[in-house]
Length: 117
Ligand code: FAD
Image (cartoon, rainbow, N blue to C red; front, side, top):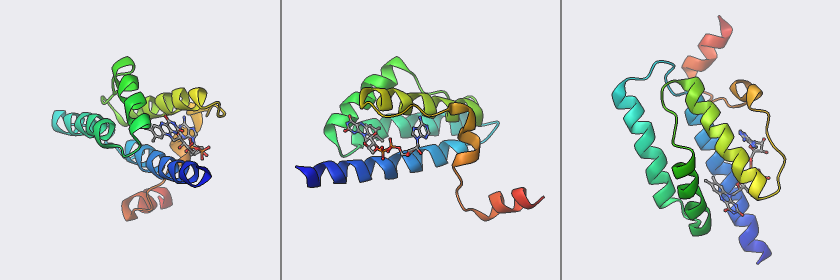
């Protein structure tokens, strides 16, 4: 039982990391196609996430908080809010969404270049 909980938590941490990093790199001015891609990704994530209980909750969250895809900022803030809703349910600390832009980095060449300027 403890083993399963540990694995579920590791999967959760890895998944949130990927999700927040993706949203933090989403275009600032996305095309309709990019917006549609993000929306599809999130709904498919809700269908395919391997922890069934988590996926069920996440699908309810998607209904209550439809994905915001109009800009990088809107998408990142949306991700932060839904993660906080999950935190609340699991009685974990709330995250300050004002600081999210500084937290997630992709380690990509383009990003590093931008920072050096
Ligand atoms: P995590 O919640 O995994 O967070 C990792 C790190 O992200 C934190 O240490 C913090 O630095 C940062 N962070 C925290 N909050 C935010 C935020 N709002 N925005 C940005 N960054 C933040 N587990 C269950 O037991 N039951 C469930 O129903 C469940 N549903 C889940 C649904 C989804 C879609 C996902 C991805 C995970 C779910 N999990 C669920 C796993 C759970 O959310 C945690 O990932 C897991 O419990 C490990 O928690 P943690 O304390 O390491 O921090």
